[in-house]
Image (cartoon, rainbow, N blue to C red; front, side, top):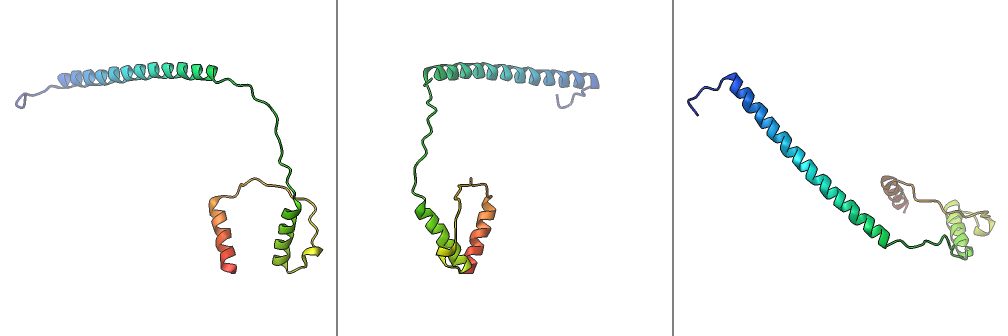
Amino acid sequence: MYGDVIHSTEALIITLFSMGMVFLVLLFLSFILDIFKLGNKRKKAALIKKTEVPVKNEIKKEEVDESELIAVIAAAIAMQTGQNPESIRIKRVQAVGNQTPAWTKAAIQDHMLSQL
């Protein structure tokens, strides 16, 4: 084989045969993966049917005494502004979801620590 000369037609046949073989192997692997996927869906469906539980739509809010929270907020504002805490009037306290990126939190913390 080392001394033989391969003509372009033979090279083309070898190339097409090799590409066809790779295509068939990939098609076979795709078929095998589809079979596994179907089996997995059946197992999930069986698990879902077994674990069906009625859900109650009762949401209980915790009743929290907000007077302590308001006192802490008023004290923090008074300390920052230098005013008397009794002169600060807080009308409403509303929880806000945490939407601050981590890098912003780090910058705020760094700024607060630099004030000490």
